[in-house]
Length: 431
Length: 144
Ligand SMILES: Nc1ncnc2c1ncn2[C@@H]1O[C@H](COP(=O)(O)OP(=O)(O)O)[C@@H](O)[C@H]1O
Ligand code: SF4
Ligand code: SF4
Ligand SMILES: [Mg+2]
Image (cartoon, rainbow over the protein chains, first blue to last red):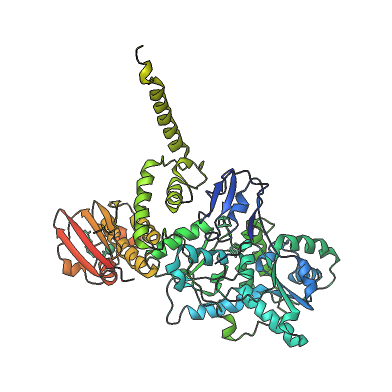
């Protein structure tokens, strides 16, 4: 299986500084030959390594707006977090109008889909057959994290697609109904705040196909829409639901759920710590966990331009100022909300497919750990000593990658050389 | 005959230290994942080991969580120096708990630990000596 990734390394810029290896939440990065290398099977495209790289050697590969030319109709799906990039005095209708003017025939607020999911969610959580705590599917980095690191929690996910997918479906329906055109004449693009969503478009978290054509960088679309804003003379019709807009920020999914049944956690490291508790059978009294990879929620995505805390305030202000909506709620059949894909585990921890061999390797690993200095210095290119030991038993690193082991071996080698040097050939032994 | 591969691990558990409660079970869980046990099985083991570890933290002074992993089964021992259990049958009842109020305030002590261990383990055996301590033994068959 090859994995699509939107987080890419620029080898020419990478200095092998090891800043990223310790920050990657899935320990997917190693430095080899002075360059970072990302393990495809482990990376969840969270974008953390982009944030921490001092050399700007990593970036998100997004789709180009040139793709708009290929299709007759193009819809832009505007993420709730997008609005938080603008000052709160700017109306949602003008923001939508300026985005539309960049070459789209349609615009659709993803918060319209989020609103429908919110209603379905509160009903679902009260129903039978729910594995508590139920997990949100809206952040693809978290979904993938569960697939690779917490495979036994997969059945905790709620059976709903992410609002982005549902909005894409709705946009297609709307355009087809209005124009009578076919699916392949329609392009649907999402303004993404993060690499995880780009990956979700090109390789969905399940095995199915995405309803989206591409994911455009929120930063790029924002830059152009912002420039165009002064020229905008009209307002696009707005749905503008506070409940839907709230999905831009951490805690926003829970507006339809009782507060004491609901837990929001942001930042992938915090999500990991919480899921570890869930794995041990704790938190059964919690009905729903909204986990988001970015601090603050999607307003904290690497492709969002503004400060996430300011964006949160703006979203709150915009929500308060909402006048009556001019667009109706999306009228979608329940089947349009269901996750069309089966989520499969993608475990990477297993040391070997054969359990006997895996046990043997684990014994070697424990023994190796005893020989390493446990300083977690990172000079070997692994995030910590135990990870190096794992790499060694997997055959992808050697114990002399550790400078301390190397120094020991060099000094014992030097000792042997001295001994050898002291020995004279037998024929010269008379002194 | 070739000796079967086994792995033995042991994690110290400190009575009364809730900040570290669960660390042993978490580390065991990672080991089980590295071995490649079926997720459902490693989950059962982790849940039961966590409850056993927690009981040491709540009810005993100190102890150790041990595990022996082979291709066919996983055995877990939670051994402690502690007060022992006066009436094991009663302790096994759902909802029975002697956990003090300050422990309940932390969200522990619902009296479901031992019943959860029995539900998850294929075998459960408790040896306890009043005033000395308790050994909870659990065995999980790997039927993969
Ligand atoms: N290791 C132990 N040492 C002493 N007493 C124990 C131990 N484990 C369990 N018990 C006793 O058994 C009772 C029931 O245990 P358990 O079902 O785990 O519930 P809880 O831990 O929530 O009280 C405890 O309240 C305690 O009285
Ligand atoms: S995107 Fe996230 S998971 Fe992938 S290598 Fe970077 S930090 Fe690790
Ligand atoms: S929290 Fe939002 S922005 Fe961040 S990775 Fe998840 S979906 Fe993307
Ligand atoms: Mg207990």
